[in-house]
Length: 215
Length: 215
DNA sequence: GTCTATATTAGGATAGAC
DNA sequence: GTCTATCCTAATATAGAC
Image 1 (cartoon, rainbow over the protein chains, first blue to last red):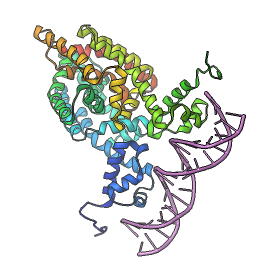
Image 2: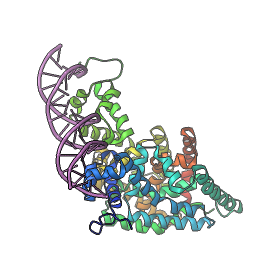
Image 3: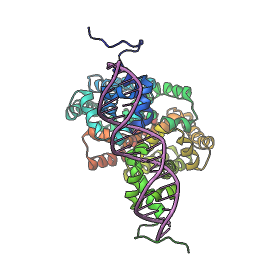
Image 4: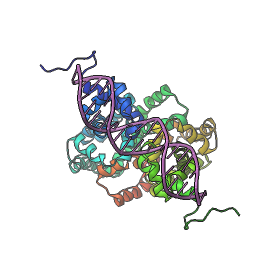
């Protein structure tokens, strides 16, 4: 039974470092983060960060990878499933808003990282979802395309391209968090007010999107 | 007629520096940007950056301020006006998508900066719009609230909170650009493909939003 | 595995000539 | 206003003891 010195009750060191790095990278961005700050947050010294992760860059990648992994698989699962469009909309909204309310800063971090390191998008879609981008695309978009097309032909929904549908849904769920500082100022909300706003949004959004689709 | 040495045909130095700084800050973020790179891009030496802007921080603020100023006033103008809700939606969509198509990286930059420097949001709303946040809020939200309320009572639209309406509209327009690298990979688009996607979106979005509002 | 101490470079900022 | 040269701290990374 191999086990390191079992310091305090903090779980093992590598995890502690990852958690600390997550906090610092999210707050300051990869470029703005300081290894010293991460070490302090993890209550270890700087050398140990390099022992486990070799360089700041690799540590940043590890953090990004883990964060992205928490965020995407669930939604993809839902959207690629055989559920009805109505259920997909409702479930996606609930799933995403509840998830993001617990980590409201994640979208800002992910989008910021992707903006400054577009090469990470490969890692994001590939490694995180477990399938190559083309497969992911086929699974999700093809399914939506089929469902939306059928509904349109049946006359129950007005026609909409699967891509626009997908982007609309993601926009409406994610943007409020990505733009949170701006929206809080614009709408005059504090943390609690923002949470209430999202709470109302949980019921509002499904109605809004389904209303837009209904013919 | 005061005029500096009139180097090349580049406009004056301060402008050149601002433009160069814009390019570098947008690409790498404030923390990741290097003063040396900005100097090179502007074809001046590093000392001159400090002569004009005193410090990297002030230069970053100047760039952010200018960028934000290009982005917001127009939409605010439209949304606070006396135009009908329908016209506001159509005009906002067209205005925003056309504007962003010319500078698709701007939302990523602005959101990234706001995420890492939330204090800039004050500057953003205040200085950029020319009015204090509360006034801005009253002007835009009060107007929308009145219009949406009237339409709901008249039975022509289903009820919707002004805040949700505003956030929905902004989300649908801005998010695709903020998440551009991700969406391009997810949808399998190159630059041209993304532009076509947005082109279709110009007509799609107005119909989508107005469809959602119609009772 | 974890630490202290230190090497080394990078990068923002300034002095001072022109 | 613009340049060259340089200062100086901050920050990543490594060496080597324990």
